[in-house]
Image (cartoon, rainbow, N blue to C red; front, side):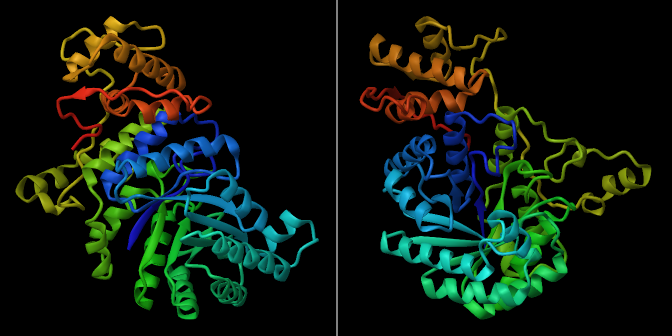
Length: 429
């Protein structure tokens, strides 16, 4: 049982409509996911040229050994045109998520009566065949709006797409109408048809995204296959959002009646690193975590009722759902140790940069190298529209060439010399 972070650009996931996510923040987020224990991330749309530069930077991180366990995926429509364009733009990307509309509602809306469900399935099968021909190693086929699709059609889609070469299927509760009771039975039946793992993709329109994801994973567990859940940090996503990473992980650990394998699988996620990600995403997006949000909300650690507080003083487990909580923390804006906050921004000079990096125990070989890093820091703060946190500053200094590719994707000919560090890591922990 594993977790996937869905798209970190602007379909769903970290970025909600109207929320800006800088190029550097995407990379820092992925580094955090890798440290957190997340196995996969959808990193963008390889069919779009302006997204291919970000995907290129992520593949550089993989090649350089910064991402050791996180497998990057691209998202495309299940058409041969999208598959071929993705391969043309990002030949180094070896994993794809292909999405095919399954319900009558979506097929009618998207194709205006020109395509039947059979036509859609045939086109999707051709796209999977083509992806296999082009050498893609992992293909997840998403059944869009599966919760509003009749089960016989889902079985038909799964059989034919399995024959075409799909490695895994995604059951998408696209508008959040699925129930925990129903999805457990449906997933168990579909796994019986395919024998393949499924990904559960849930939306929170009715407040059941975590419950639906948990029940779907239990259905796959009942059928004897490994399962995956699409999650986002802080539950961000379209409309009411998607399944929240920390909430689902804690449900797998502590909810009543969960099969034995799920709590074991949940231990792979570092809760404190996940809590750092929660704070970082909130800082970058400007969307605060509500006080009464599950797991990470401040109110979860406040007790006032006389009956509760009296019992808690006698025995902490009486009114606490978790034995251990993630260490909720916020990334620090100011790396300096003194009381005066000195920031480096788009208009700062080399002296300010040297002062800030001195607080981070980092030295440069010469002034030319410092000037190179200054240019990168200036551009990063301009794009993010906020002061950089210490983890971002350290990453830029330690990985200047990759940082230049991220921040100046239109100019990949320039390189930056490496710098000398005293052992700081670019993320906490």
